[in-house]
Length: 116
Image (cartoon, rainbow, N blue to C red):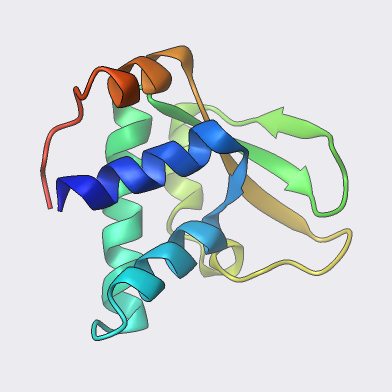
């Protein structure tokens, strides 16, 4: 499972990724698992990333380049809000995930633990 965690971390390094895209990734890797089980795992992975300061969540209006960084507490709460786990409509608020310098270091130096 460690490779899945790295794949998701890589997607945050490559570009900002929406919460729904993290879920799509898990749904494509584990089509045999239920959508709800994959969402539960996505939340678990992102919470770990947030608590380790490997990623940051941003509030964004879909279609805009403006990002508003969220605090750790806000981020953990937002993971539980189902509306942000579906693809947004244009100009709708959404949540994007971006990496931190520490996140890049963890990725390139193979420091993420296998916790799934």
